[in-house]
Length: 437
Ligand SMILES: Cc1cc2nc3c(=O)[nH]c(=O)nc-3n(C[C@H](O)[C@H](O)[C@H](O)COP(=O)(O)OP(=O)(O)OC[C@H]3O[C@@H](n4cnc5c(N)ncnc54)[C@H](O)[C@@H]3O)c2cc1C
Image (tube, rainbow, N blue to C red; front, side, top):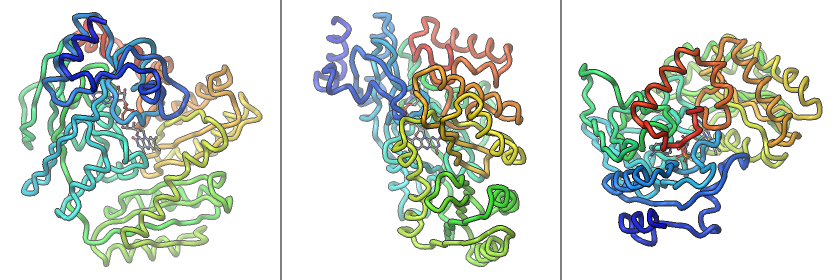
């Protein structure tokens, strides 16, 4: 209780939440598979308050779980047993630099708020995905989030020009110069991208924007087979104006047909040429095109409604893997059988980002907490690695995949990661268990 009093002195009574009903939603993750109890949820509003909170927890020897929008899918942003959850929702300042195409955002700013802030400026924040209404800048940096435009605009790491971070003892590090050239030693901001709350709490970030394109077009392309779609995807990936290529397995659509969702942005003439290529591609059976913002959002929402559709069939085991795009056909053809071998009565759903070789494999019809779920996870992750890929593409490792990290990282890499963790958080108080650290 002494720690709670100290935290109240820092953030005020109304920003230290302890009531079980009030904090229940912060204690379970978006998949419904992971979660535990928290001692409290604390809601600091400034970097100085974050620093004081983390320092007080360190003195008391109490672990801290940083939490943004709690949309993570690997159990990394929820408590496991009695930690303090540090919620970043009140770190919501935003300032756009229209001259240089940058935005300075607090860690708790949502992806949707970033998009909105750019509206009408001639700039855009080019990352996007379905959880935009809740996913935060801090969470996206911590997971090195991706989404639909990675093939052209990179993951979150590429958008970060500088960070402000609170370390495990409360020390504040800030490097927000955003210089094009800066050859002064270790890239600490880069190190924090993908660190999943284990090395520091991100409090703010300077992010790079992209110019708004002359025209943006989205198409829902129905194909007669997944392979026809993947062949088209390889051809489209070579065209600079193509910014997103998503694929949807036939099991995910009402009509039972595989499809691609393609977005292209650039000069109107070039976009028209891409349209001709798609329409004439062998195996394409229908093309729906959207040009206006509302129409485009409607087509995207068809793709974005897939997680809810799958969830309606039961709590899924969700696996996010990536393979080289050339190996996508091999992986997609084999994954159903690999799952069926260990879970014969299950259903395997396949969709994802074809342009990056990133597949979201969802499996329903099994107990998501039982041994069959583990067997399914192991089978899918091993198949991804056998196809030359990684066990985590954009959702991170969290606690969900910690035991399989050795499939994608060598003993030497794991030992270097442990050494970095020990140097920055010697008492292991920041997000213990995540990344297996
Ligand atoms: C419907 C849906 C669709 C999704 N689609 C995509 C997609 O296409 N691409 C994609 O990449 N992800 C996707 N996700 C996953 C999720 O939205 C991302 O992982 C997102 O980056 C998490 O942000 P968050 O603010 O919700 O973080 P949280 O879930 O709160 O936390 C995630 C991790 O980041 C850490 N963390 C959070 N904030 C901070 C901080 N300030 N400092 C340090 N560590 C912090 C947490 O401790 C945890 O380890 C999707 C999720 C849903 C529910």
